[in-house]
Amino acid sequence: MNPNTPLPTPLRLRTLARLLLLAVLTMLTLSTVACTGPLDYTKDDENPAHAASAKPVKGTNAKRGREHFLAGNEHMKQKDYKAAVRAYSKTIKADPTLKDAWLNRGIAWMARHRFSKGIGDFAEALELDPKDPEIYFNLGNSYAQVAYYEQAIKSYQKAVELNPKHRGAMNNLANSYAALKQWDKAIDVLERYTQAFPDDATGWFNLGSAHEGSGDGQAAETLFKKCIQIDPSFSMSYYTLGEIYQNRDQACEAARYYRKFVELSKDEILIRKAESRANRSGC
Image (cartoon, rainbow, N blue to C red; front, side, top):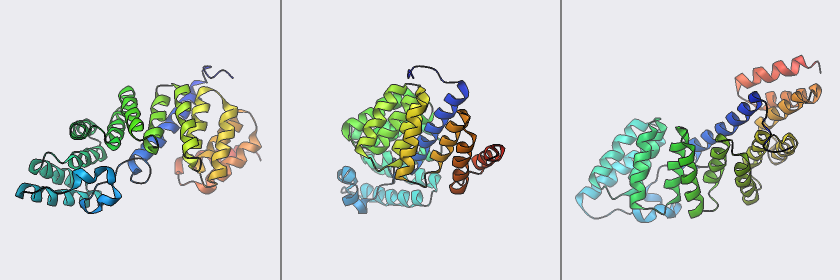
């Protein structure tokens, strides 16, 4: 099928929402997947990209700033983002040259859904270190959250340029292309992602969703099954395969995948939909 052939609107909307949901989840969890977690002076060896700026400098103000910085990190761990913003603000007042304070305050603003403030802080961090991919990555996340996808794409591209194997930036770059329905570009990025990280089931799922968005249901089916092969507990692949088979009027095959989704998922809304569809199949 021609990848430029438009899909029926409801399917295109479902596909886009699915990709964007994964992008948001990635943004919120990237100390492990895609987003920078709070930095800590005591862990420079674990954050080599931030080690130089995280070293305490001499002077009373710097010492006080370091104390506020560490307090901000503790607030971040407790998910008290309002208190984290206050602590990082005190750090910046004491030592405005500490890039990581601007970066972490930007992340805290994002957690409070104050994305314009996050963008401002990331811009300040870039003034201090224009070669840190994590700043561009988080800046891209802020733009994506307010649907400024073209700006998000530029930020993610810069993050990938500086770190060609940045999982989060590659994933969210593809999802930003998908948000603009630039499916060919999304597919190109995700193909590179799956080559770089072949054991990451999310990459195969997103690639399948991008092919589904482009109108290539056959490729999408193959890729969702590849996702399950890598991670049999990846519940959304079962749901999307159920949709594919339902749209092909293969009711019993659809019911089989819907029931497996119900077995694995914790999404109560989608569980009810999957159960209803499986029961209506008569299989």
